[in-house]
Length: 139
Image 1: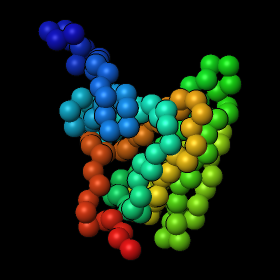
Image 2: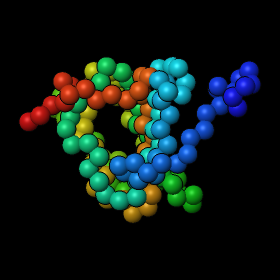
Image 3: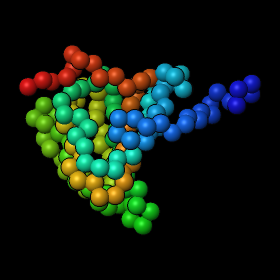
Image 4: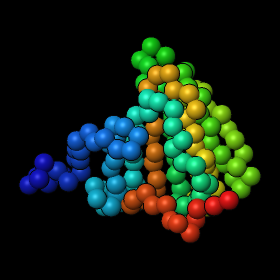
């Protein structure tokens, strides 16, 4: 769409294979010139996605969505995420969203059982996702 008046607002990426499988990543820094980044990750098997609790200086939203077209509510999975300084564990088994305000400690994020593919949509109100070493909690 280059050379058109509004073509810069239409962004297409090729599917890439990342550390957790197929993914699409759009960044405010590289794609939108804005403070919004979104990642689409297909999860197909158990994985410890993040082990160390940490925080960010931006708001973050996580969406766990079933890719089963016949039952988009049941994830057919067991997922656990720790929230807050206490690392309070929340169990996710159905399509769910998690809001993580700037500065809130979160993780581990553990996909303990995955029977059918899940779409993890990871949104940040930042020009790119950054996990600063100084904000990681090492026990």
